[in-house]
Length: 306
Image (cartoon, rainbow, N blue to C red; front, side, top):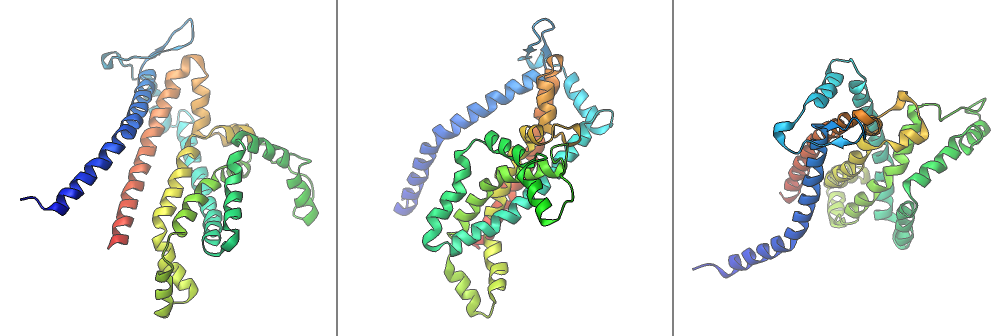
């Protein structure tokens, strides 16, 4: 005879699975279908007259020359793909680290010390989303020009003795733009998690003799690891495909990222399959990072439950 509690739990699980099924199906269709289109374009050809892609929908007609071109560029050094991939990884790593260094203290302060100003502070954190990313980057162009406020401030405090052109292909300008553009996406998940941490856990740590810093290091930080990983995933994935930040704040091959290469080849007429192949290679690389994120968050959640 089935147990009533187990039967009720089974029904509840079936109900939630049924409610989630339409959304899962929607996401699966509108991910798998565009992905197959990209693969078909990468393994297809280009119409020599119209300069438009001719996707190879039938796997028997696939042409692997575009992938061969990309892989040779990655591993033989004949083209700049390998250098661009490495540069992209370095820029994204530095940008993510700086974003975390900025976002964690801000999120912690709002969650723990915001008090009656918490709503206003949250509004300030969300405010950048009211303005398009492109407009914010255009504002940074004005700030970084020779007569912009950045040079004015640095000259006034004595750090510079002459105006500097920050838009002449500097890695620092691109990284600054990426940090500024994506850091709000890391602050919000960190705040949401830190605000839910039970304060009694910190009080218990203090009762056991831990200082405030020790309680923060041994309780708050380990508990917030899933939120940190989530914030990293949220901003790192779009950073890998970002091409407009280097275009706006640099426009130099010295700071070209993989997103710029994809955009270049997609707009390059006969080179469209190469751009699509770069998209597939980038997606495979990000899938490895995403798999690590899922594994790490699963382990972190299991440790928290234990």
